[in-house]
Length: 62
Image 1 (cartoon, helix red, strand yellow):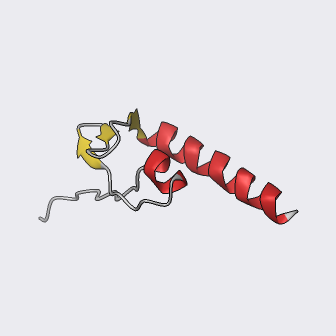
Image 2 (cartoon, rainbow, N blue to C red):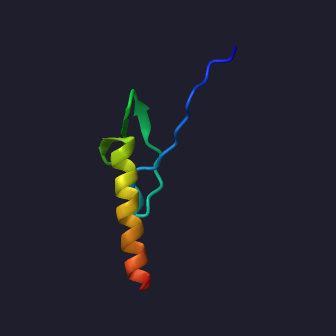
């Protein structure tokens, strides 16, 4: 049987907020950015994504 592997590709939320598109590297359950030094688990990355979406929605008046 084929082994199930979960490939998760996330972009650095810190770099993305600065309009840089950098894919995070994964080491175990932690993700890290080679450009800015951000480190965090998937929950932290998604939390920062949600914060950015709120900021964008607020800037658009929505």
